[in-house]
Amino acid sequence: MPEVHFHDLRHSCATILLQLGAPMEVVREILGPISVKTTERYAHVMVAPQRAALEKLGVLHQDLHQDENRLPKEPLTA
Image (tube, rainbow, N blue to C red; front, top):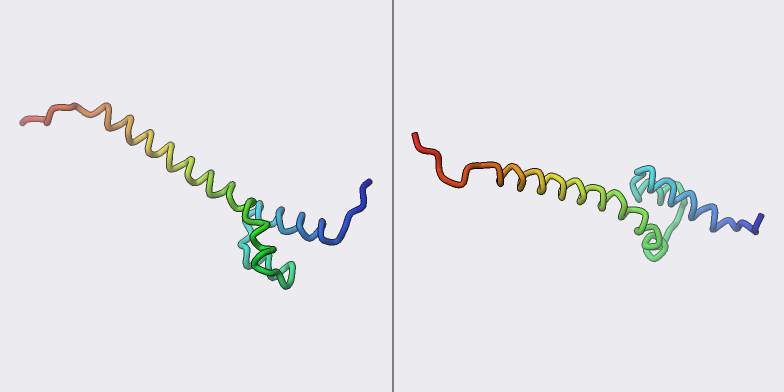
């Protein structure tokens, strides 16, 4: 097994917590003092939930657009 350093374990802990949805503030409290620069290293983990939310928005947009195409083009008359 390759050498494992304390920093590696700290990074893994932060990454897993963020992937599980823990807020960055909570992760900071668990890990202790973290600089802003160090925090930026974990930003990539938080992109996945944002991407998933935007994909859902895209699906909603497609569904609404498809429904719009099913509506009659001419106004309905009484």
